Length: 257
Image (tube, rainbow, N blue to C red; front, side, top):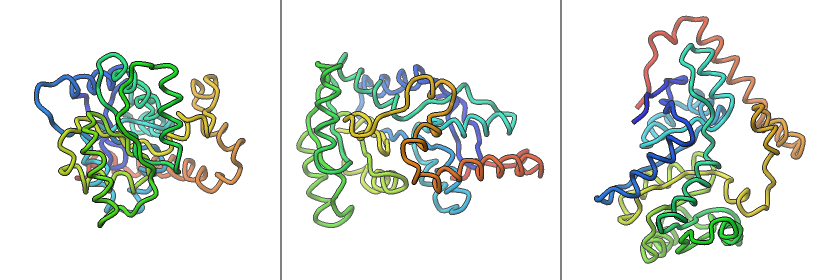
């Protein structure tokens, strides 16, 4: 497994997209069936951990933690522990569909508004026609009790190798932690927030030039000005990282389990 880079108490794997996809492939092709969770924190999520330390053990419980946002990459440089680059959950999700297309691994989409998971499946099948989708369910159900049990039963009846859970943070991570032992066939479980909206075409992703320049956040802000409140967490996060570095505390910090 890759080196862990400590970003304000969150252990982020120092990994490229290709390396992350290779790890997922290894889990899918391993002779034994074992559950592996993949979380993809951005600066907003790490800032949430700083403000609510009870989230640290949850985020750090994943088997793979990839740096989703450019703010996390900037923070690693400020702290003198540079990450190789951004490894977006959206892109890793696409790579995982490609693995299904090539290897016949079974996929289940869980999350989004009614109809979004199905639309995402249909759109992805245009590019990856051999990807093996075995089920979908929206994210609008009670996450415990009878409704949750029924969703678990539906997933298990489909027997997927790969499960996408897209409820948003931290609901998706909490659901995965609470239910991972009830999903015996799942080898890879990805917490991917709003990715199904992107895959379906319901939400348009930023053009490549914005992504390459680390300005995907700016594109999304221009498209959705109401996101300004959420976007303000990025400068707050980076200013906090700078203050943390200058205080000298970064030399003695630990990943919080």
